[in-house]
Image 1 (cartoon, rainbow, N blue to C red):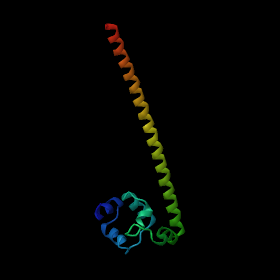
Image 2 (cartoon, rainbow, N blue to C red):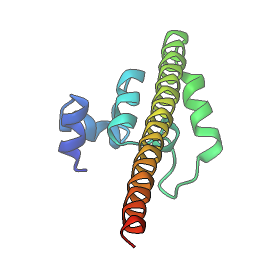
Image 3 (cartoon, rainbow, N blue to C red):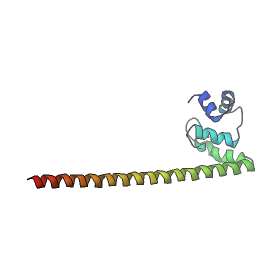
Image 4 (cartoon, rainbow, N blue to C red):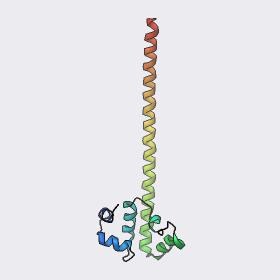
Length: 125
């Protein structure tokens, strides 16, 4: 995604996002979590160094530097996201279960049709 695309999805200006990216401007927890969602990544991945390694507990250090109110908001939002993710997984499992049930019903129908054809063919002989 381009800088403009990410900025548009996050509802901030490209200039603001550019300053954040260059570490020239701080962001609040809400924007941080929004950027993680827009980029389809985890908040921890956004804090990794360019080489992909998390330097000296960067995530813990940044969380520790937050004000208490911001940390509370972060934990609540992460909890909500985890709950939503679990609910989505449960819904996916239910959907797969329903599809399997449908396939089994189709197989039963086809089995009965095949038996009916065999019976008719056997009666003709």
